[in-house]
Length: 173
Ligand SMILES: [Zn+2]
Image 1 (cartoon, rainbow, N blue to C red):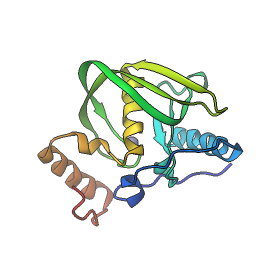
Image 2: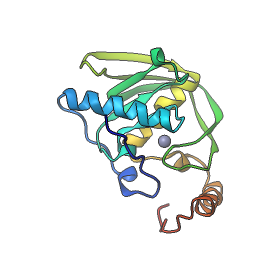
Image 3: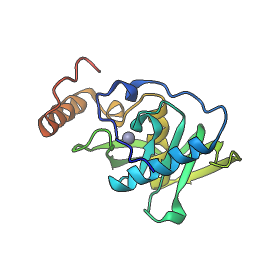
Image 4: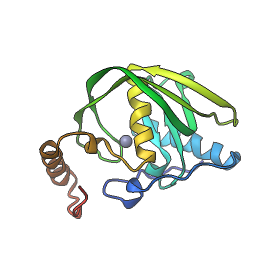
C-alpha cells in the first residue's frame, strides 16, 4: 500500500478536468483503497483522485469514519440537485487551514460505478450530499473557494497564504 501525498492548492492538477475511467482494474481498486487511507490519515470525509495527483474521475467519501459507511464512486455523474439550499461550513484537504460557509442543495442524486464495475444510483441528503457535491466539483477543477463571494475568497486566500507560507498563488481567480 502506498501512502499518497495530498496535493495542495495552487497545484495545477486541482484545476484540471479529470478523465473518465474506461476500464476498472485492480489498479483503480488499489488507488481507491489508498485514497481512503490518505483521507483517514488527514481526518477528512471525502477525497477526489486529482487531490492525490491522479486526474481520473474517482471519488471516495465517508461521513462517519466507520468502514461500513465507505462510499467510492467511479465516473460519478450528478443527475440532479434538489431540496432547499443550505449553508454549512466546508473545508478541503487540498486547502488546509481555512474553511468557509458554502451554499449547496440539500439533496443530490448521483450515478456511477462501484469498485466492482457495477452501475448504481444514489440519492443522498445532508452531509453526504455535500461531500459528494464537493468531490464531484474537484473532478471539474472546481474548488469550494470558487463557490463563495469574491471578497470573502480574497480574504480567505490571504489567510491561507499567511497560515501556510505559500505565496505563489498567482492570478488564479
Ligand atoms: Zn476538497
